[in-house]
Length: 221
Length: 294
Image (cartoon, rainbow over all chains, first blue to last red; front, side):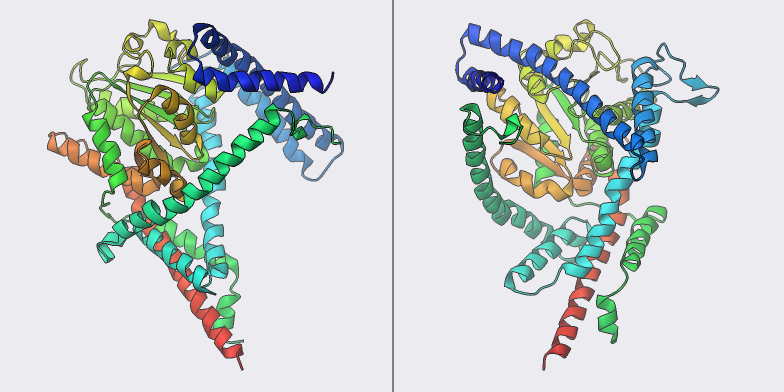
């Protein structure tokens, strides 16, 4: 029963989810609306509880065992609760104050302030580091060793120049050529891949709905 | 060890230093490069421009701060276009981290318009001219639910006001009232909009995406599922160019800050530096390989 019940729920909801797209009957539509607007949201809310529980357990275990960089786990936990409390009770910004005082003199720490002053620079810094790694990797590994690599190199050059205004100043038709590469050969290849991915997704979904693929149940063999 | 061998084994920190210099210097000492518009950007601009007056522009902020540099200028440019045309604008976020970015963009652009407004008609008012629905989950609920009744999906807006009480919502009931929905994303969320919102309800879609992921979206642009596309910083700069030209034609010269156009100089030098690295690396590779051959 422990395994059959989840399989039955997946079978019923999977078949119904697909059916609702093709049957415009009012009864089917009503059930579909309830499933999407209520049931899915309840499941998502439980997902949030699981997520917070999981991250807490992971970091508390690290702290308990004094694992490598365990101090950062305190930063994660403190920020998790601090941002949640400020976000829930502190108002959005100085124009929309909440019940919690989030201003000391001219210094405010509303959720929007925390977001723009901490979250945005941190995330942008992490992503911008890609430029350095890409440049280093291009210098070290991007070699015209054979015909395929040479074609890739030429395409990369055209696209990189086409992606900046200088390209059209140097060679007027270059942006058009870059656009052609993306529109014709790239799209042709992508469509082939997408057909494969689409068929694979349908096959895997059917296997899960029909209970043939049970890896998602966990528990190993 | 010859110079070519040394070039092949150069410390990667030198590469990092060069990239830092070529990115930072043009930002400190900018030089203006006028972007040349491309067909996907022109199509998107023309569609927003030619939508029926009663149709709203909806912007889905589906990106997070990591891709802010590329995607935020798109959001600002599209908001400016919508407000400049006096169009109803709806904003939502599909990623919870996008909420702050949407709020920042709305505050900035609303201030730009309201500080220059001479009458109530010129100003942009929350709840009347635009609405910020905020975020809810899961995405399939939002995308399918908005086809029936938006107020059911978002009972309250981002600021906690009941959406049913906002006057704009009388004209913005579901996808039928939306002329174009633009998903600005650093992920595959625009494809989910196609799968759920367009396939079932036929809403017109466009996307704004990072340059690195542009190739993935071209099949959908070619098939007409996206009416247009903004690709990376260049796409945003091209949109800014088109909007500026339109406002100038109309006699509006506000000299608003064009962040994407400003960043074009930095992006140009960075691309040139990377290309120079590739050329240099290949020259060193071929010379050392030729020397090793007996």
